[in-house]
Amino acid sequence: MPSSNLGKVFITGGAGFIGSHLTNRLCAEHVDVIVFDNLSAGRMENIEKWLDAPNFKFVLGDLLFPEKILESLDNCETVFHFAANPEVKISSENPQVHYEQNVLATFNLLEAVRRTESVKTIVFASSSAVYGDAEEIPTPEDYAPLKPISVYGASKLASEALIISYAYNYGFKTIIYRLANIVGSRARHGIIYDFVRKLKENPERLEILGDGSQKKSYLHVEDCIDAILFGINVNRGNAEIFNVGSEDQITVKEIADIVCRKMRLKGVQYMFTGGVDGGRGWKGDVKFMLLSINKLKKLGWKPKLNSRQAVERAVEEIIKGG
Image (cartoon, rainbow, N blue to C red; front, side, top):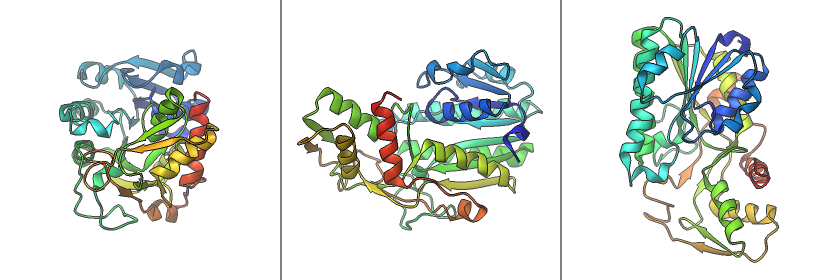
C-alpha cells in the first residue's frame, strides 16, 4: 500500500536520527503525522520545516509517562516505534537505562495502543544486536537461538517479544525491522560521528576503540527508510520480521581511513585501545555482523548503496554538519 494508506501516523522518537528522516518522508507525501518525542536525543531542527504544516503535530512527551501517550494516539492507525536509547556502550555501565528507555517505554506504548481502537499496525525499529555473536553469517531472520551479548540487544529482543504478544492478543499487526548500522545525516552517535568529532578536536591523532578489525554492515538512512516503507506494503501476517542492511561489510580501520581522507587529513596517528574479549570495542560489542537481507530482496527491495558507499556519503554529510 502507498504511504497515503497508512492513515494517521504516530512516530515515537520522530525528531531523532532515523525517526526524523521518516517524518520528513511521510510529511512530504502529505501523510498526517504526530511526532512524540522527549527531545533527549531528538532535535527540533530536524523537523522544524513541518511545524506549521497542516498535516503535522509535535507532542513533547516521554514514553515513561503513559497518560500522555494515550491522549496523543487519538485516531492514529499506524505507530512507528523508533524511540530508544541507542548507545550500546552504556549497557554494561548502566543497564537500567536500557530497561527503562527501551523495554518499559515499549510496554507503556503497547498499553496505550491496547486501550485505543484506532491502531491497526505497529512498526518497530529493532536491531542486529538481538543476534549476538551469530555463528551463521550472513544471519537470517530465523536464526536461533538468539543470544544478545549486550543489555541493549536484550532490551530490543524483549521489546520484540512484547510487541508480537500484544499483536496476537489485541488484534493489530506488527512489522519488526532488525537494523544493521544505520548511518547518515543527523546522526549524533556512532562510529562516524565519533571519529569526525575526535578529529576536529585533534587532527593529528585518532583513538579507535578495539583493534580496528571489527567488521560490520552499514546502511545509509535513506535506504533504511525505503526498506521500512517497502516492508509495510508487503506485510502479510500478524507479525513479520525483516532484516535491513547492506550485503557487505567494512572494518573499523577502513572507516577511519575514509574519515581521514574526506577530512583531507594526512599522517593521522591511529591509537587502538586494543579492546576487550579479542579486540571488541567494548563489553557487549558484536565484532562481526552481516545480516541476510534475502527475505526483503525476494519481495523486491535492495539497498542503493553498499557499506563503503553508505559510509562515504554519511561522512560527507556529517562533516558538513548534517
